[in-house]
Image (cartoon, rainbow, N blue to C red):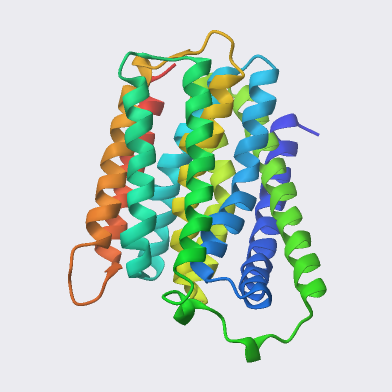
Length: 322
């Protein structure tokens, strides 16, 4: 069979598997919140965002170990941009995305701080392995802060808890279903990345473009799938928590791993257009979420703006990079 046709078939099949597992994964996430009496916002930020970020982590480790740091770096940065422009933008176009006060007061500031720290580290034009270690430490600070916030504000967050009487499955059943569908998400995502990368190689596309576009979009598909399904099911806290958590993973843990495992570090001067898009998209996300209108949400017009930013960025880099 023609290699291009074979990889295209794998890509299409993997997308269908991703859609199926994404639907079941969101249901399992809500059941997990019920079983352990955890606010859905934290299920989205910690558990779902970690599970949907594993493809990026795996691609980063494999790429750096195989001597392709451009794919690893491009994957981390491109996934961040894709999560806001593609995932949030497209989701809001389908259905306006409600933003809770916990997102405004806690989640978005944490994302802004993580991005500001990353931008500060790249101002000298270079990211060293030491910088990578700083980003990884920043990630663990984020996790500890989230867990501490959960413990201190248990009473305030009580309304976000899933009611006990809604639990219909045992904790064991909930856990294995969550693990099964998370695994299906990861397997389908890995096949998407594998086939998409092969297609890019067959078409002679450079590694940086592969990392920033095909690989980044491919590894963002779990976020896209779970976010759209979450919003359609009325689980907006899981949806936006997933995106914010995933982006904190991208610019702290995933980018940190990519830099830490690259002995000479990376030159960031060529990546300033990407960092500029990250700043613009994050600012738009925050402004659209906290515009203090009657309904606190990202509406379809704002989703369109985010999506247009992403498409414009995608067109620009594919037109000018080689």
